[in-house]
View 1 (tube, rainbow over the protein chains, first blue to last red):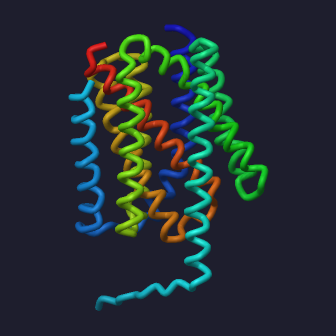
View 2 (cartoon, rainbow over the protein chains, first blue to last red):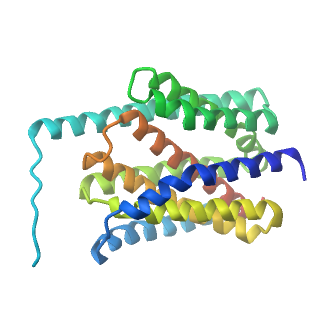
Length: 59
Length: 219
C-alpha cells in the first residue's frame, strides 16, 4: 500500500469525525418532511440520474 | 388541531436575502473561474499526485480551520479563494490523466456538472421549496459514502467505487437543493459559507462524474 492511499485513508477518517457532530445535530434538529416534500426531492434527483445515464451514452 | 402559520417577512429581510443570494453567486462564479485556472496551472506544470494531494490537504485544512474563523469578515474572501484555488490545483493530475485517455470525458463531465448545478439551482429558486428536512438524511448519507470510500481503499472493488460515485452525485445534488433553499428562506445569511458549500458540491459532482464516465467510457 503506497503512502498516497494511507494519506487518503487518514483524510477520510478525519472527514468522517469532522462531519459526525454536524450530522448528529442535523438528525436531531431537521424538521420532518411530508410525502409531497420528499417527492419534491425525489423527482429532480430522478431526472439527474437519467441525465447521468444520458451523459454515459454520450462518451 | 392543525395550526396554520403564515410567515410574513419584512421588505428589509427580503432585500437582505436577495443580497446574500446575489453575493453568493458572484463569489461562486469568481471562485469557480479561479479554481479552473489553478487546475489548468496544475496540468501545465505537470504536478505530481503527491503535490496535488498536499494542495488538497492544505485546502481542506483552510476550509475546516481558517474559514469558520474568518467567514464573518473581509478576511474570509482570500481564505475562500485559497481553499478553492488549492482544491482546483489538487484536481490537476486527475484531469490530466482523463485528458490523456479520452478528452471528451472531461468536457462532458464539465458540461454535465454545469447543467446539474444550473438545473437544481433553477428548480430551488423558482419553486422556493423548503428543503431543510433533507439535512439529517444528506449528512447521514455523506457519512455512509465516506465509510464506503474508506473500505474500498482496502477492498478495491470497482462496482463499489462506481456505486459510491453515483451516491455522491445524488447526495451533492441534494445538498445543492438544501443550500439554495437555505439561502432563499434565510437559513443561510453568510455568502462566504454558502459559496464554500456550493463550491464543494459542484467539485464533488464533477469528480464523481469524471469517475463514472471514465469507467463507462471504457478507458
